[in-house]
Length: 285
Image (cartoon, helix red, strand yellow):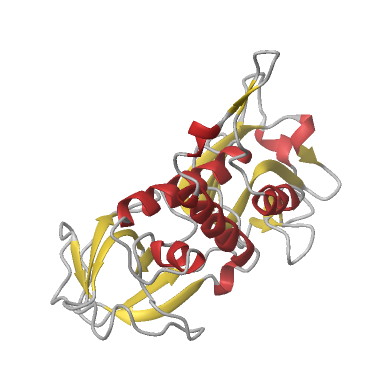
């Protein structure tokens, strides 16, 4: 499952360029990332793109007949397909993604013709599903969420390879002037495939990767194809990195729990106020 901060991000929070306990720190990043998902009751990565088709019933609570909208309760980054019952709609011609303002996620689709309405697809008493395909997740600037940082150095990268060689410098400077450009926990995109980085070798300029993650399919990629890295929404990235560093710093702290006279065990808080505040703020998007 996608991390919302890299190992390098967490290391910067504990002011350590190297550590002999990378595995423990990486585990805290994973835990903090999943805690963020849990706060939104999401079974998929909430703050990273996930390719999937999802379906909802055509029902009055979801239909706005005046604006020809069909509402759903999960953030959509990019729309690729819509099927209503047995009818396939054409994205960009018949139907489009819709949101209240440019800085909000898509949470509805709209029939583009004033002559169409959602109930026209309900021809009998059977329930009708609207099946929506696309990339799901939250990011306020999806158009600029990917940073092209490297190229494929393999000739080619096969669809089964688990080691990616980059063409220049895996720990070099990224588009914002930060290093490393790729670290454990990075989500990469090569053409239509997503890859998750589980380790890097700065001497060999390689990354160990899990292929075809987040609903995508592993495929072969030619040499010199762009390697892009996903930039998690900055407040989320920082909150997860700090939460992971906090959990790492206080590991073993449960041993110092306090037992009151009433027999109540009070464990130290394991959730930073900053982390909680950012998640609550994003819940209203």
